Image 1 (cartoon, rainbow over the protein chains, first blue to last red):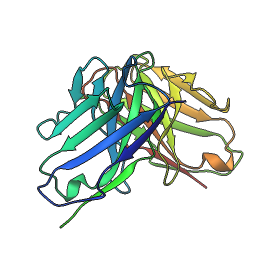
Image 2: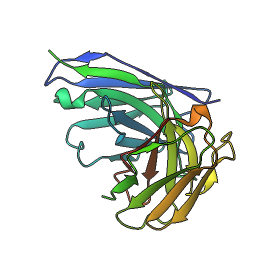
Image 3: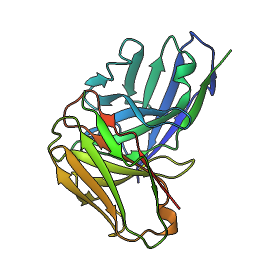
Image 4: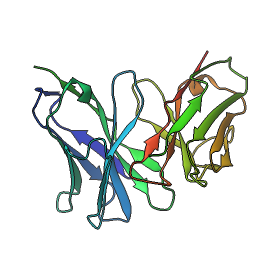
Length: 119
Length: 107
């Protein structure tokens, strides 16, 4: 079955750029699904960051749009997240997730990766 | 942006009891409403989509209802593994996709 695995630095300095990748196994990013990033600050709820469709269409959360870039690498079967100008408020567990077009729901999630913003 | 308000924030129940969780949307989301369960240290797990359809492998004790702006997740008889945090989510009018603040079901 499809599995997602996030990876990237666990510590990022303030004002720097957070960069994560999500490797997709057991399936293809070229399938008709939206591939998303969702984050969860410690002890808090879930926040949608943005999504990319297999065709290349991209949507971002307006609250983060000026700082976020999401992309798809079909050759590596993975998606990426870049978040610039980070502050302590960006400290969170970052998840990648698949959103099915037919259900509008996130049916598959990665295990998540904790990113701390600190000097 | 559609705001999802979940209530109660915390629900204190015992195994075997019935749990009723609410999610209210600031405007209609039709039936494009999903529910997730999150246990400590784990990623969310999809329980219900399209307001009332159980996801693959989800036990029948979980049921969803509602449409428009008012939705309910019911757990008919709580099992020990059901004590967790539950989130609702909409993608009817996006971006952004939005989540509710969560309801913690505790023993």
